[in-house]
Length: 409
Figure (cartoon, rainbow, N blue to C red):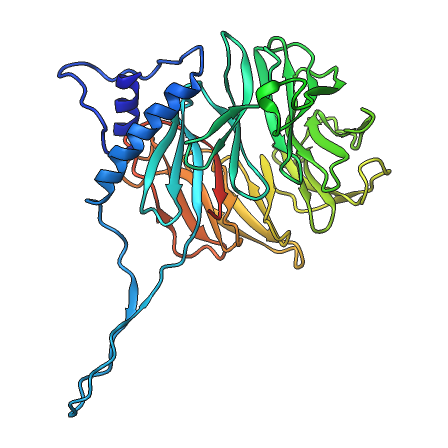
């Protein structure tokens, strides 16, 4: 594990907390079969102490300041320069190389690994931005749902199914519970489950872990909650709603003959469910996702589909204020205004799927692309919603980036 952490730190360009023996090659595929929460916490504390000592040597961003007026011919004392505090842009989180969770200040001033091991996946941010949920290795070959504080110092296992396949943890609107999908093995029909955060150390009785419904589908994506907390929605060929009260499962859409409906994204302000419908472009024969909406205030009502912009997209995401829709293509990013319906392309011809995410105030967009000096290595970039002031935040030497998130804290 020590060799892997050193390799990951080098790939991220982070300071090392220990030295690797001379001549020993970095190891990139050490995946533990058991998460030892106490060991991780101890390792995190040691790493945090080393990083804290190192951080004193790091350059910090200079504050902007207003100089005093020129000296006048008087003996009166001049006022001191007035410092303008730097705007706090919040913090980005992502999964690095499939085996670590990384914290990155959104101004690019600081980056560190907060959790190592367990092959984390499906990173999700709590509604208040204070906790991370993710899937990681449990006992033996089991995968379970965990939560962690933003610095990684606190972790807690939430689920206790003992299944080998667990995906899509989704926070309830009040942040008190998680929904997720699971099956004994990958490829088997999924069940949808919920479990409370409180009492999870006595799972399943302590936190009320229960199966909401058994599905016929073996795959689903983009599991989310309705603001009222009584319905879940997800994509599994069509877009579905699922009652958390009585387990009713309703198909909200009928896919075209060209492919599935996918990437549902609920606008909490308008209560419209936006999603992508696979369509075919007659001139070129190309297929891709076109934006549609369900005009419904309740998940169990008969929806009316509203055709929107003809992007060839892969994913959708609404800004926290519900005014802006972030659309990601294979290598492109657009931002579309809800009120005007007009769109601006922010990224074109990228090197990777961009995974874009809004800043908490929706003024900025972070995304993944190849760096200028090494286009084959994914890096995190940030750009204004108007397509200005593009900056590269990370300068990794190797590795992958997935599950990009942005929190105000």
